[in-house]
Length: 111
Image 1 (cartoon, helix red, strand yellow):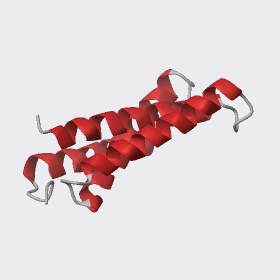
Image 2 (image 1 turned 180 degrees about the horizontal axis):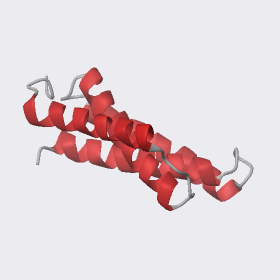
Image 3 (image 1 turned 120 degrees about the horizontal axis):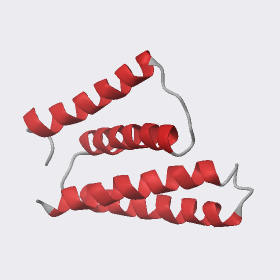
Image 4 (image 1 turned 180 degrees about the vertical axis):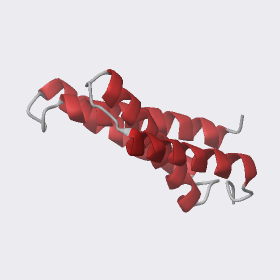
């Protein structure tokens, strides 16, 4: 696997941790989750900058944000008990389909 995909994978992971900690921080009123949030977002942006050396920003951001949306929707459901209705599930599925389409069929994923 090319190194830029590894950077992107860990950027998505860091962003997902950061967003989960953001919810747990209760609007930055809890110190531990607030610190985790800031550190995780800093790591996510640093890792994105490394992947940007090879990938175009539009494609990189689409994959990063799309995967983040899908993972956070799952975490919101499992961890925080947030419900998704049919249209929301369809929307998340379409986002995932878009990410797969970019990665499987597009030649735009690298400069």
